[in-house]
Every structure is written in structure tokens, then in C-alpha cells.
Length: 524
Image 1 (cartoon, rainbow, N blue to C red):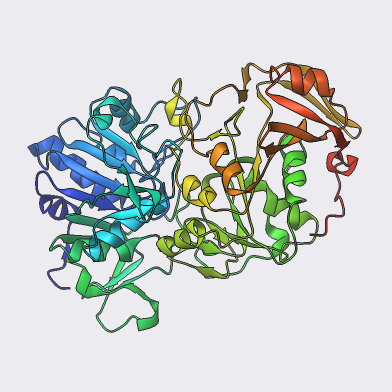
Image 2 (cartoon, rainbow, N blue to C red; image 1 turned 90 degrees about the horizontal axis):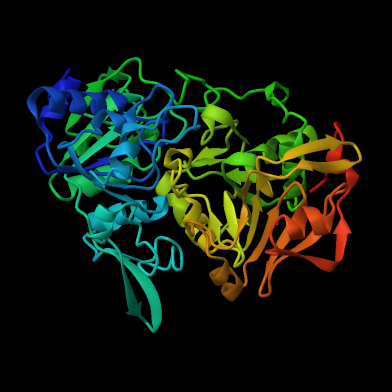
């Protein structure tokens, strides 16, 4: 062993008051939980470190056993958090401590798109003058709306400005220099070279380490095990040891949420395709089936959380599991994207791309189509997935949603037309038994995560797939172009949306094959 190997408590003691700390994680995936726990424990015992700013390109921790950021959600310890996403979960679970701090205005909290946060690390590493981007224009990211601020304290201290450059409007994020990086890997050698053989993604570890090293900071790596220097294959090393100052060994670190270690997630084995569960028959599956009909063989498609996450299982049931290459923001390419607690991981992946590179691909619109979910849609086609004031922890924030949708050529949003409606599914159609408790087609969304106005201006092809109809975004508003069998267009669509969705005169009826509990013969 060398003096780079220290305890989590010793690592926490190396973080100075007022530091900017960047943390690599994606909810439970790759979370350096032991180090975060030690920081929280040290503050509770000694009152230091104090007044930290933390950067989280993707959320640190979950609500199911990996506390992550909640370890450090203490008054006096945190002063500012800038994150792509935050821990989220169902309303049946208590609000995470970090969300309570945000809601009480006890810290300045910002929600910055994950890709932009990774860009910020690259630009500060190269000592460029901050990120200049058009990602996020006319969304909550834009200062004309919220400027990424999640509460009043953040609004008083802006981190983004609108600027003119080359005759166009851009968003400028000035540099925020990180002093400390906290990374996660599987194995470190005694020099600090890091490998990721048990991880479901490499995330942004390298970029975060370089950003800190280039400004003379401290880089801490939490790993499962340590080996002798020279025993790791150079091609397997994702972060070289000269960037690492301290190694913390946590032999029981979780691979991802409620998963100690699944070798298929880390690409160590390939699962038989028939070992994956198919989507359960129900209305969610009907929606996912219709969305899947937008695919073409050979597509590269991005996939988001919610109903959209079922689409790979639709293809599997149809014997088309290899027809499409999936790309997810954590970095997996190909294979079978996982659902539930393991969302963000894939089994049988073709490759694991560093998340910052994946986001460059997304921001430039290199994929063929994107499948995402919606929480609210308004008359302009704006989508909200990032804020729900009455229960804020139900949504994680924007994550990569803004990066993905900004230049996507074709976007398929999926979701229910209303929240809480009683619906009946049969082989002949879907019937609305009783209306929903909350509208999802609203006059104005609470938070603009996707700009319908900008999509129309730039010519993006956007549809919203629901259990009642397929809605197309047009310059004239939201128009239902396909109707589900069993749905009354006037009552269940126009009246239920208070006229916010109209029905095209030539709207067609969807195929009843969508409704049946058997393969539908889909061939992208």
C-alpha cells in the first residue's frame, strides 16, 4: 500500500471549508456513498467542512438505501448545490433531506442540464471562458424564465446569462472552478489507476478529475478493492493514477440501486435474451407499443424514464431486440436498457461511452429519434418533467432531458392523457370509466423543460403518444391525428383537455393489434 490509500474519515478531513466539490454518481449507480457519509459525519462531529458548493452532473444517491447527497444535507455544511438531477421517488416515501433544504430556501439550489454540467467541467479544465451554448433556450434554463434557479436563494445569485454572439442568442455559464472531486471505481492500483470492471457506467469521472487536477485541487477515489501497481491492463484504466490524490476502500459499495453486483450490468456476462421479463400487459404497454411503431430498423434511439423505458421490451417480444441501437445518458450503448431500480443501466451493451461524450452526441442531435415521457403538456406543446411544486421529490429534475431534446430531429413523448383516470382495457378498445383527478394537458406547464415554441420554429418532428390518441405538435397547436379504439374524441379528448387538444378532420383509428395480449407483428 502507499500513502494514497486512506480512510473515508481521513479523506473527509482533507476537504477545506468553502470548497467546491464535484461528485461523480448517477443516483445509486457509481455513488461514492462511503466518502459522502464520512463528510456528513465529520461535520456533525466537528463542524467542518463548512459552506460547501457541490456539483452533481447526475444525482448522487437514491431514496432506497444509497443516501448520497442526503449525507451532507446539513445546515452549515452545504451552502449551494448545482445538479443535473436530485434523488427522487414515490410520494409514499418521505421527502429527502436535500429536497427539504431546497424547499425551505436554506441553500441555493440549481437544476442545470446534465450535459451542460459536464461541458462546464471540460471548459474549466481547459481554462476556456465558460460554456457558451444554445441548449436550454426558452426552457427553465433560460434566464428569461428561471435561469436554472430552484428557489429564491438561487434566483438572487444567477449562474447563467443570455448573451449575443455571432448575431445569435446564446446562454453563457461562467466557470465554476472545482476544488475537490469525489469519484467511484471498482479497482485502484496503489498508484491510483482506476478500472471500472464492476460498474454499469464510467460516467464523468475522467473529466471531473482533470477539471480539479488542472486547478490544483484534490481528487478522491472510492473503490471496492486495491491491487499492486502494474497489475492493471492499461486499456482497462479509465482514470490514470497521476490524477488521483487519495484512495478510499469501500468493499461493500453498491453497484447501483438495490443491486450489490450484477455482472450483466457491467458487461462481464451476456444474458440470454429470453431471460428478460416482457412488459406486463396493460395500458402502459399499449402506449409503449404505439410509440415503438415510430422506429425504423437500424435506428439509434435515445431512451428516457417512464413508459418509454418499456419500448425495448416491446421489441423483445416481437423478436426485434437487435433492430435498434439504444443510447442512454449514463453511457451504455446497445443491449437491453433496464427498468425499475436499474434504470440508467443496460445488460448486453455493445459499449460503455463516457457520459460527457454521450451528451455531446445527444446535444448535437446525432441519434435518429428520442423516446421520452411527459408529466404535463401545454397549449404551446411545452413539456414539464422537472418540477411538481406540491411534491417536488416525485421528479428528479431535468437530468439530460434538455440536452437530448434541444436538437433532436424526432421526439416521441409518451404518457397518460390525464392523471388518475379510471380506464378499462379490452381487445376492442380503451374506455374512460371516470375522468382523471388532475389534467395533464394544461394551459401553461408549471416548468418548461421542453419548448414547444422553439421546436416549431426549428422544425422538430414532435408527437405525444397517450392511451387516447396520438397528438402532433403543429404551428396551430396540439392536434390529435390518431384515435384509440373505444375513445370518444369529443368527450375524452377535446372536452377532457378543455379544448387544448383538437382532433384532425382526417384523424384515423389506431390498430387494434395494440390492445391484444399477444405479439402484434411489429417489424421496424
